[in-house]
Amino acid sequence: MSDSANVTTHDFPDGHALAAALAEQIADRLRAGIAERGHALLAVSGGSTPKRFFEQLSRQSLDWAKVQVTLVDERWVPESNERSNAAMVKAMLLQHDATAAQFVPLYSDAPTPEAGLVTVRARLASLALPFDAVILGMGNDGHTASFFPGGDRLPEALDLNNAARVLPMRAPGAGEPRITFTLSALLDTRALFLHIEGEAKRQLLADAQQGAGEAVNFPVRSVLTQPRVPVSVYWCP
Image (cartoon, rainbow, N blue to C red; front, side, top):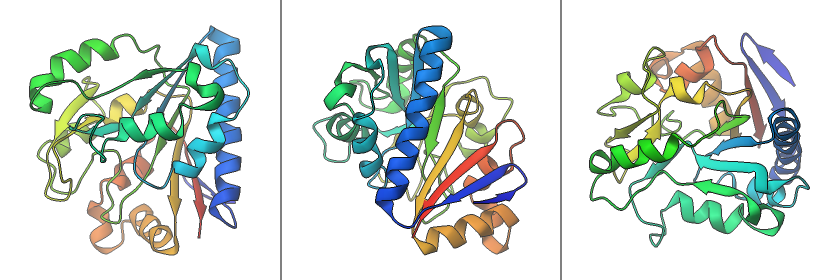
């Protein structure tokens, strides 16, 4: 384990060890939320990296019926699309005991995220904020959530004074149009985690922390340098 300013890094020998440790940590956070308030709220990331973690978390013993689960961001595609984060979460996380959890999706049946924004914002009003845990990932371009380099609404999404919970996002590297929680909304959490795997991402993260070279402009740097919530990095080779 290593520490730097607001960031603590936990190293694991492989993805299985990381998944087991992160699942236990998140389950403890959810149990604490249920014990204190009668409910818990979790925001997770899509992509391929969290699949092992999701499978481990789905087997954790807790009162899943009192847990709400949502995504930090989503591609604007229906669940029938293979790139849907919601579909992956349902397949990998909302199984075993976790089938009892309430899933709150970010996609709505509208042609664009802009057209669906009112519906999504109304749906998210049901979330029992603050989050008990938010788990972010990171791409090779330094993006996290849908905070992409060159994103059309990136400054707005990273503005810590922005009261909006979600925004549409379009960017050259994003593929489909996206919808994403804003950084200010994601920081309304009791715990913030960054799950990354591989040596290349370890170096990218270090560069982003230090603001080295082009990494000074990586969107993930805004997460690492914000003063509101400590960041726990879970990493393995």
